[in-house]
Amino acid sequence: MFKGHCFPKVIILQAVYYKLRFTLSYRDIEELLRIRGVVVDHATIQRWVFKFTPMIDINFRRRKRGVGLRWRLDETYIKVNGKWCYLYRAVDKEGKTIDFLLTHRRKKRAAHRFLTKAIRQNGIPELINIDKSGSNKETIRAYNKRKLTKIKFRQCKYLNNIIEQDHRFIKWRITNGLGYKSFKSASVTLSGIETVRMIKKNQLENPGRSPFNSFYSLAC
Image (cartoon, rainbow, N blue to C red; front, side, top):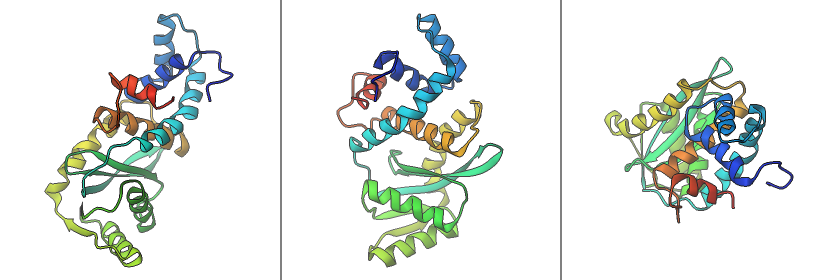
């Protein structure tokens, strides 16, 4: 994927990492690279992020450490092009990220998509803690009926403090950024932010000596 680019792989990945790890605009990254003697337009950096972030996400999932069997599931909301969208997220009781999904609406179908995706990637949990959301409760019941599983659920607000605290990092990143102009750009960028966050949580098997080295290894 790096063939045909005018810049070395390490420069490209460093620019992508800057965007996903820090609250920097594309113009900020352009200026930082220029200080280091690398002259590249901010629009090019944006194309790099959109092109390489999905590959990083796929490779991370292949090397992601296992998570616990007791999940905390919740959703938060972010604004995309002036409209509210919903980010479904789940963590285990240790705070390790299980999965995430950005959706246009907060409905049973969206909750079902997220639960199916999380189980497909991480296995079947023994218990899921949720808030008072009726859609999440009905989704778990429907999944158990269809797949003949026995996933328990519990509606206990204070036990969801772990995931609500974890939401704050994502919300902080978005609030301090310039926002998203399209659903696709939001989805791609958020997946990269979540991946870097999971690297920081030590959820990558055979990590590198630093978070950036771990990130770089995902593009090999």
